[in-house]
Each structure stands twice: as structure tokens, then as C-alpha cells.
View 1 (spheres, one colour):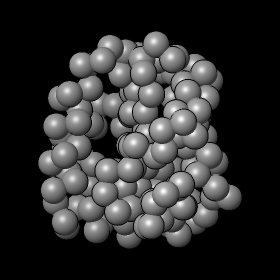
View 2: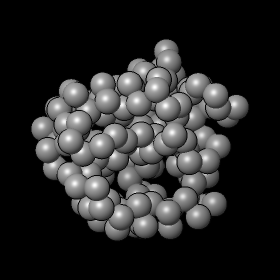
View 3: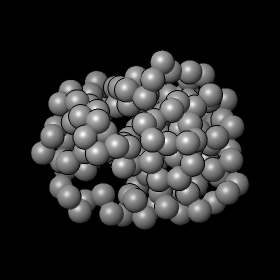
View 4: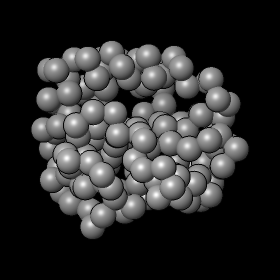
Length: 146
């Protein structure tokens, strides 16, 4: 399922971003461009972060930004952004490098996807490869195993 949703067009690798809002905007951009989500989905993630903090930071260096389906999800989707130098989120000690932007049309449709992502998150070897990837091809090589 990850490889079906996370295509080359939905992966970005950059050295830096100016702030966490820019990271989220860059991560969600391919999903907006292909109609998976509307611009309102980006705004919902940012507003939720201001209201509730970065609830989607799962572990040091790893985030899964998302919002409720009714805030602008047209179809299930996944995008990935690697910020090589990391970006600081509010109230987080460690900069986030890996951003898995999740969009689910219904509240429980993302469970299988999260299960597969959790397998990836449990692989120290694959996480290290993602943290140190230099380009989209290196990211795809890791993702293709899931």
C-alpha cells in the first residue's frame, strides 16, 4: 500500500526549509497538485498545530502531519518530505527530518497504511537509510520494501 500511494512525484528531498509551516506546505504540495487534498487540508494541519501542538511528531526526527478527513481530503494519499538539516517544531527538542504527510478520506481508512509505516519505523536500518538519503531514488529504494 505504501508504494501504491507514495510515488516519485509525491517525494521531495531538500536541504533546508525556513520553518515548520514551510515543511508542511512543501510536503502537502504534491497532494494538492494532484487533487488528493484541497488547500484547506494544509490550513487545517497548520491551525491544528497552533492549537494542539505538533501532535503528529511520532519520534525524534519523524513526523506524520495530518488532519481530519472533512478538512479537505478527496482521496487517500501519502507524501514524503526529507529535510536533510531538519526543521524545528514547537515544543520539540529534536529537529524533524522525515515528514510522512498522511491523508485519509475516512477516519479508519488509514489503519493499514499506518501499520505498514510502523513496520518501516521499527527498522533501524531503513530509517537510517531515509535519514541519510541524498535523493528521491534513495528514498524510493527504501520505500519499495514496504
